[in-house]
Length: 81
Image (cartoon, rainbow, N blue to C red; front, side):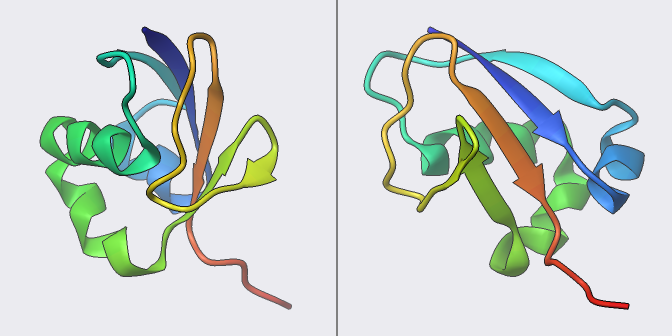
């Protein structure tokens, strides 16, 4: 299945892109997606403990299942200012 992944803020800088399309096996979860993303962009792994992830505009946990055409947003922690 294909999912669309959006990268925000410093994560966009680390990947060099605003979005990518990633192909995963059926039944894959957010955690599986992150493993794939960390393999493609190892610098993102440093952010692993603090990443926020949303699937179809709803915050998601690592065990959240993905579906064909899902939109996954990966964000650094929210900062005030």
